[in-house]
Length: 236
Image 1 (cartoon, rainbow, N blue to C red):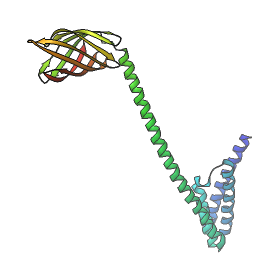
Image 2: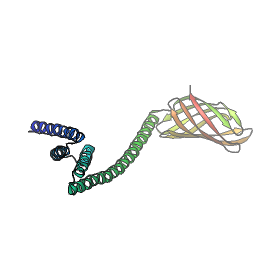
Image 3: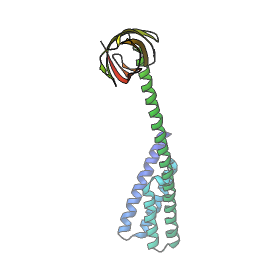
Image 4: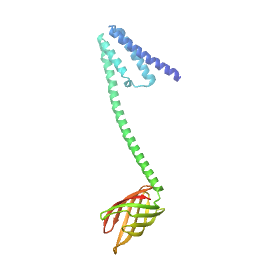
């Protein structure tokens, strides 16, 4: 059944094309009456084609073109009534098509905006999940060399850490002394601190950082009484 329908539609489309070509040729040689008959035959075939394929007339600009030529041909032989009706039919198709086009355009734009928003959120969520997953796999246990810049100066202390779940312990060796540290890890964030005796004065130091990857960290530090600074760390 579907095969027969396809062949019928092909025949209808071919018939429309032939009728239009014949009408054009007849019109050029002044056989206007015969041209009108061919245009009307093309009109009937196109309507049958639209019905069979469930296609709105507005989707085929040739159909409006055929109506316009049929109207001018009718005007030429003084068939006033039909000559006045056909342009109205053609204009109605154009107006409806334009309105539909605008509405479809609005709908398409909204779909695009929504799709891009959802896609952006999905990508952001995916990247966050990947970062969190990567951070969760990183164990800070090991020896690190930190490069520190503070308001009081710079330094390259060696920090040895041991991670046990979210618990962080270790040892600091650098310009501020040789002392043990304690801290914690949550996700890809970590912090640790220590107290040191510097020239008879007790100072409290806190490091707060982010795990960049398994071999790199970065963050800020605070030295009570001496200022603040930044650091990067590389695993040894």
